[in-house]
Length: 142
Image (cartoon, rainbow, N blue to C red; front, side, top):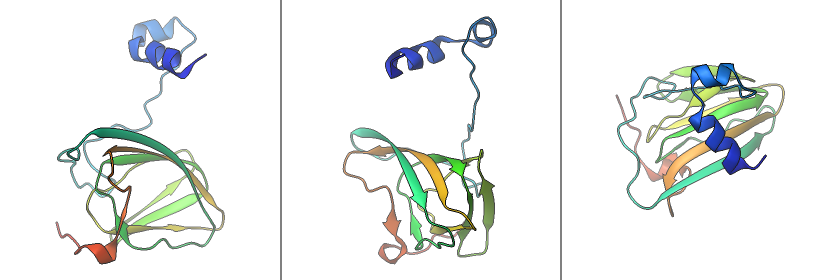
């Protein structure tokens, strides 16, 4: 079945119609805030551009401190990932969990014993990078 047809079928399915069909709809995450409880306030300006990336991070890896200029959400396919902010706030995610990422807040990810595989959806704008190194900005406080 084509992606457009599947999306159309899922988009038109109600709880009642899904119960009588072969379509199963499971909300993985729906949120108005990031994993650290920072609320989302707006999407970036510009021509909308949606991106879905499959990201693999090796075991025992600490990513560089960075931020994201756009809302994004990920799903952990395998492995374990701890997200942390410089002020000590952290949250641990495992395979099967969804992550709502922070926007314009400096953070990093740290992997465990195994590689981490994520599928990440970015709701950005044409020409906007997915992330920015922390050295390009000051740390934002709540």
